[in-house]
Image (cartoon, rainbow, N blue to C red; front, side, top):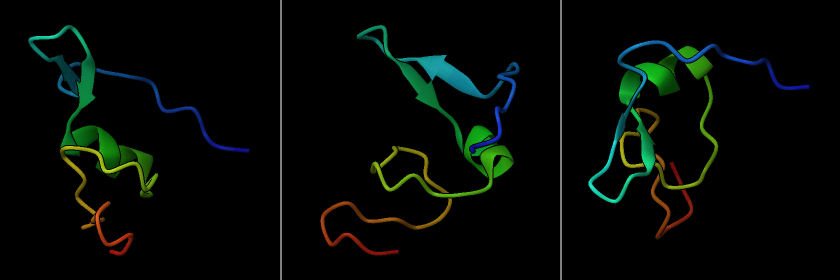
Amino acid sequence: MKKIIPVEEGDYYLTPEGYRCFTEQYHLKRGYCCQSGCRHCPFGYNKKTNSM
């Protein structure tokens, strides 16, 4: 079961389209890569090559 991480100020921002975009700060708190190609992934995942 995955741990629920409470969302705090600075964990995300809203894009011009209105989507929530998680920041590097949030990803580091979460502690793992979800392999979704997140814009601010600090783990180095590349969605095009499916590798870190």
